Image (cartoon, rainbow, N blue to C red; front, side, top):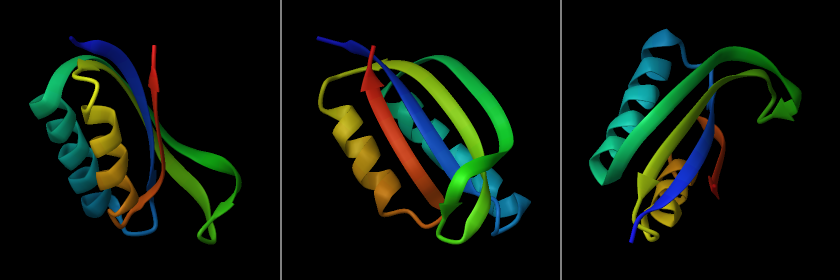
Length: 93
């Protein structure tokens, strides 16, 4: 049984463009490996409503995908332990 999900990831921009691209690629590959990507909405760098880890800006990427029910918890777990990820939210659509 597969479900449809949307993942919102906010990356740190403090580490530079190379680190940002590496993070975007890492999570895009992780989602593609464990599910089917339907849409990627790259919002780019935006000002945060409040500072997270003393950072006023973040890089937003929203991904819509289908996957098995176990994968979203694993995606959140990996994102929370990865340096450079400020916030992650995965919702079932």
